Length: 129
Image 1 (spheres, rainbow, N blue to C red):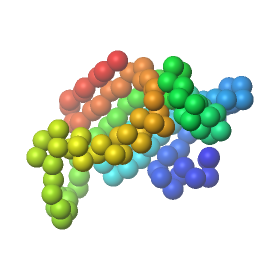
Image 2: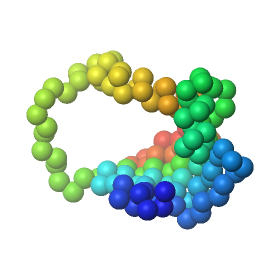
Image 3: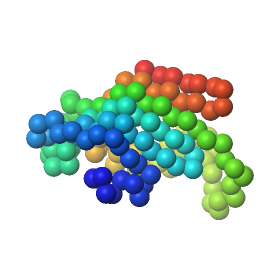
């Protein structure tokens, strides 16, 4: 896991197994040109337990449980070039476009929890529990 994640801009300070079916990552960082994300604690099923629970339809337990998440949205250095193709006109159209992907996520992660998330852009902060 530690070898694959840096290519995606993901790093963590500590890995701990919790029994045979779960693991905990502490001090998770995700760096991208758009944002920096810091997660104090992330607990999830191990890969084999994840597949087992997804296939048998277990949606009672959290597949992923996340502690505090800090998101710092970075300002772009330059205006991005517009991409070709149509941009959804509103949120409903955007959800419609993403429906297939969202269905796949819902299948593989039927239950997740986040303790607290704070997003910051310049002087503004948005927090949700």
